[in-house]
Image (cartoon, rainbow, N blue to C red; front, top):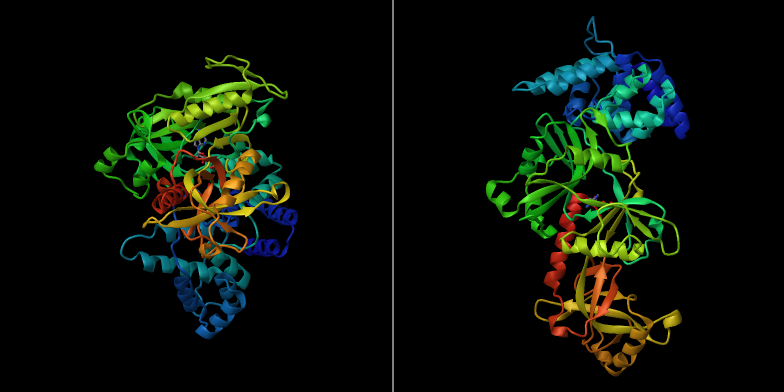
Length: 584
Ligand code: AMP
């Protein structure tokens, strides 16, 4: 372990990424297979392979107690050392002394032997597990005969090497050490979930032979938003698969020989929450990794996200909740089939294989899609390759997309996904390959309570509106201010109305600025927004991000605007969605 520790120290003290990679690569080159496997894992900050569920579960207090027994330092020495470093490994390292009761034959630590001892710690179980763990830890610490080794061994145990290496750099070092293709190394890790196995395969030229290990989640591919209502000119010139954007929770399903694991967007195992989906996937005849979305679905119809919410709160569900909120897993991608990782194949090929293999059941369905090719031009024309009836083959792309969007909404879905037909599956990436088209988070009907003179080309008109929702006792509570959405003509027409319906200055609202002009609460607006947040800025205690006026609602009296209760409901729904899927 001396060379491991020296390498780690050298990497920690060089700021340059390239130098870190070169140092690590030359260390990797010097190792035999067994040490290489373990050292590569340790350098990613973990005592075991990522796919390995074992953990060490030894806390700082145990480490200190055992270290004290072996090296015989006092508490004051440890406190001083800890204050100086702030890290358990760095604090304990300098306190290494020849063991107080030196044994004749100690262990010789190499990365491989250390990992075997880690395995003994992880596997200790039963009544005497703690004693057993401490005994093995003691053997490990006794074998650390210098400060630097002790420092890094303890850092591995506490799960943080702190040398400034991300997993990506370890992979680069593996590629550099053995002259392997960096992309192949990355792919290898994605397939097998073990950087140690990847290092050994790179060394032996067998990266291609790494098979998919089921049970290790692959990062989710993400989409770039396109604002609704644009001309979608960027889409021209490529071929796209267009499908509904489902409003549920994203799930990656690993199905292998009847064993199914469902992973959430945060890579947590959520299998127990959706037993009906897991049971159906368990009947598949071949092994596969799917990407898709779990939605609430009743009688073949998607239910709104808030229906699914009741299930999100539970880790395990019972019969009655399953009946109350039936779900379906809508599959839209195939990442692996049997031992083969498919992420480098184009989407169309993955989709073909998916359709080939797939037998839909009540709780697992295939997401339908349409394929379109478009050509460049000011008004790009579309050539519809399959499945499109109706408006014909030469439609304007914007009209076509908008029509599909509305159809998706009518089916109860959130919007559209446009995915490049030739796109590989890029885990964890958001880019030009996938676009999502969705409407704002929600809209609220609000009433204008104050107005301001505009700026620039709007300096002669009242264009900035402070608006409010209704409180529990019918009072008006401000929630935001909108500057955009109405046409110049609409604003010009509203200005004289506001001027004629000003309220006296004493009716200025508590949180208003001096330049806000209070007006009679009569003009009802529908405002759209992307995010809702708690905020002290407005009387309601909430604020809206990117509010835009959708229209003036002449048809609605101010008594019927939305209430603070509705605002709180949208807010809770947004939090639940973020909790399950990560931030939007
Ligand atoms: P984002 O996570 O912000 O990139 O937005 C994409 C999200 O839309 C994904 O995380 C999925 O949860 C969700 N989604 C809904 N329908 C689809 C679909 N058909 N294809 C891909 N993602 C989808």
